[in-house]
Image (cartoon, rainbow, N blue to C red):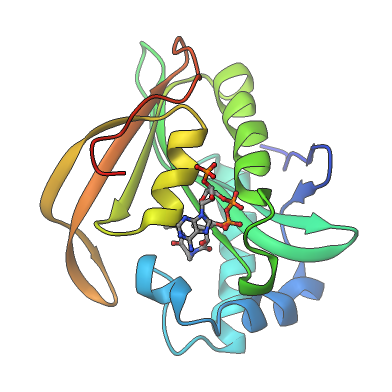
Amino acid sequence: MEPVTLTTERLVLRPPTSDDADAIERACQDPEIPRWTTVPSPYTRKDAEDFIRLIGEWWDDGSEHVWSMFRDGVLVGSIGLHNIETHHTGHSAELGFWVAADARGHGYVTEAAKAVIDWGFAERGLVRIRWQAVVGNLPSARAARALGFRYEGEQRQALTGPRGRDDGWIAGLLSTDDRTPVEWPVL
Ligand SMILES: CC(C)(COP(=O)(O)OP(=O)(O)OC[C@H]1O[C@@H](n2cnc3c(N)ncnc32)[C@H](O)[C@@H]1OP(=O)(O)O)[C@@H](O)C(=O)NCCC(=O)NCCS
């Protein structure tokens, strides 16, 4: 499918191009990103170039939808709907994101994710979006709770990545959910 650009109050979300490789490479030097995600470490220029190429392929075949987030033309993060599972009752996907260290704490991820979730439910036929994080990732959990995700539990040793295997928190959001934030027992 054709890549989609989403615009929010402060951000433009669009797939990255080769011109964005420097900014992605720079942002992914922050150890907090590989600590909590499957982003490789050390992170090289080739990793950024491969990521950009794959994002283009994923848009083409509709298997994943990843956007870079820009504020005033500056790349501030990455967000995506991953692992789309198709079903005749409606599809499901996983929300993933990172924000560059110097751009954190401004609410960018919640602003971007709201637009991505709206698009996923309204335009991509999703009925459920999953959020998963390594146990202890409080900033990510707070962002998910703020978006209306409901905490669904802890999955022991369920998350794998270059860093190894970790216990995971899981939460879900349905297209029919009221998105008013609810209490999470772990926050
Ligand atoms: C998770 C991440 C994207 C949050 O980015 P951010 O720009 O700080 O997010 P926001 O400003 O939108 O804040 C989202 C929530 O996190 C909270 N938060 C932000 N930094 C925090 C911190 N260091 N400790 C605790 N809570 C924090 C905010 O208060 C907000 O919660 P609230 O709405 O309940 O007040 C960012 O920390 C990051 O990129 N981390 C590394 C990669 C990662 O963990 N990705 C997610 C994998 S599941």
